[in-house]
Length: 582
Image 1 (cartoon, rainbow, N blue to C red):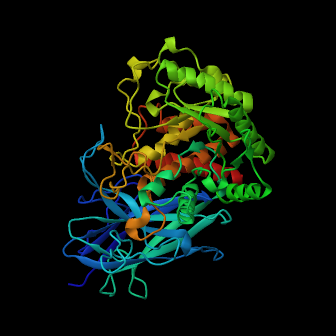
Image 2: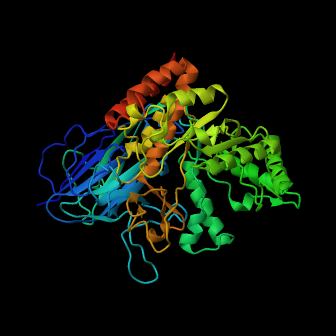
Image 3: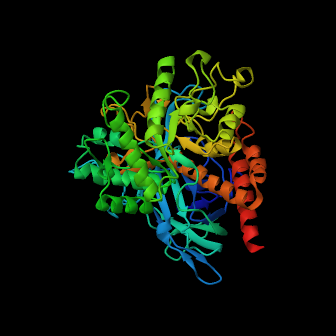
């Protein structure tokens, strides 16, 4: 029997079912907000219908299923998207294919809905983004060892093989409808037939229809954010943090972080020398390097590091004051002070730590009165006997489950900012001002076990409470170098993927990072926030809040319905596009 290929593409949720025709291999495309199981059937629609602003990236997944026998060495190719009326094109290199790799979860995270097992998360590109070489099937011989493959993949009966597709719309793209395709063929290289027509070369043709709206997202993130540094990468790869080899790899992590609308950390190569009196010394050459870095990576938030002295509250206090004064003066002079902050202390959980916050806050304020001081703490007291830290904090950062609307309004009315963060599946504490109301609420958790929409909905929750920033403690905490996150992503045994949105690329032959499904959904949430800001500028904050409340009435009951979230996003997009036309 000739092999047949049925292709079904859809960005909308899992709705329509492909034609029920005999076939040996089936392709089904689903939206990016779901995680495809390894051994369960999925359904989808027949047309890819994507909508995006200029400067935005939209994604979808393609599920390959072999119905009778193994299908070998399947290849995929991206084609340009063309606007019919004038031939304007979005180049094929803006349509990027990844192979989803299933990682083992040995123990489920607390409260996780699926059982432990194999779960899709790591995204191996078909092409090395740094060398341009194809990443094919796994290689186990000779000097090259690639444990996980990209293109040239096999399809096993009873198991799903899944591709992730990113479609990026350059900022200079004209509005309108663009049409294109992906093509696929297997090792037998013969003509396919089925519900999707084949092209003249005998490859299955999968159509994509993309509507580009007539508005543009800013190049850098509007939603403030901090996602940690990349020091753990050096330890994991056993590289000297000061070596040129590590710096080259670090730059690739920085590049990927920025490409997903997250502010990258300032690398060590841009840190200034420190004078004997504590003053940071920024030369003209270093200032030029800073300017290039900020522009290249669209940096909107800059963390002022902690003063590098052993006794900043004692003998080195004046040095620390000079240090912060010099840093802020440098940022202010170059126009970068608006988004600057100093990450002062993490989770002060006793009276002594609260006292330290007050002392550190006073020190920083003496050196740089306008430098915002961030403390990872909720804006209400854990224990009244510890005393207030209001005068020492400018950016409060509660866990998702610690959010309290009244407390947020109080500190924001006083001129403070509020960010949010998540870690270790934590719910509301018993000292929450409305504990009896919220004690059974469940915020979105950022473990691999939970639906990918948990990452995207975070910015919707933040906008619901007028929270202006998002913090996460690390993107590359892989733990002990002997624990490979490809084989065991369980932080502390059960917090799967905690602190790790990237995978090390050494297992796939890449000298750099490998993205995750979770990172992609976080990017989409950051892009959603840009929609909120644009709609607010057009229609006011109440118009945005009305839509956001449909997705997140409160932090404990956000929607996990992909179709609903995508429809709300589309509503905002069409409103903004209509305003441009009118």
